[in-house]
Length: 85
Image (tube, rainbow, N blue to C red; front, side, top):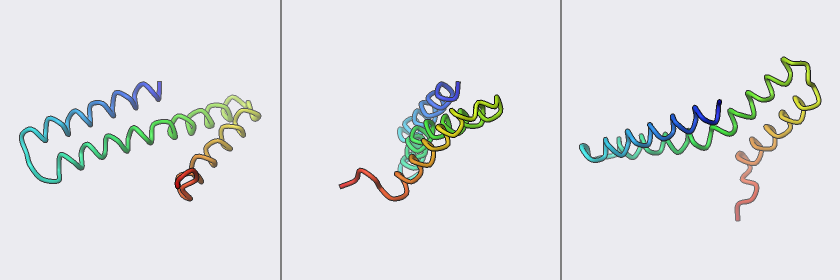
């Protein structure tokens, strides 16, 4: 559900930026489209956070800790630029 909502939200934000770009010039349409891309990048991270929360709520600690570990790896990779050349 989180991925579906994130994908639709990203699509509509980027579409709004594209339509806004037809009628306006300047940085505002580009900023709206950039927000859509950032939303697209944040959607999997939010999915892992929701999965972690749900696993811990259901007392399924094994997969909760695995989800939390994946989240830490994702965040460390984005902060320290793991995989960039």
